[in-house]
Image: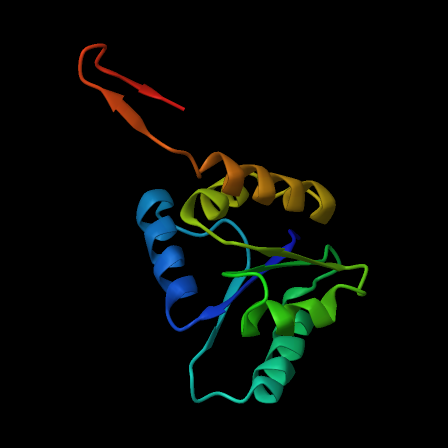
Length: 138
């Protein structure tokens, strides 16, 4: 069994990223669940749902929770899991992060968390285009 993955995001951010990843990979290589928060949701209700999702996702290898923005409601709910040794939380999900995770579905929780952060950072860069040299700079 692999690490479970929970995308805890505002509105449809998580579902849209997961749809894009599925379009690229064809399928999802690990157990993944979505938990979206809308403006009318009560944080306590989402927190209770998150606890249930984590329990279902954790098949002994742990759970990685990805949120969209640090300090937001999804990340504030996810931080309640930070004291659980079988749950890691990473904020700032992007498509590069999700694809990077899906490249390494059999890694243990600690290593998968490192890959998530690495993939997320590698996916953020300024692209300069120099017409004369016709190349991109990282």
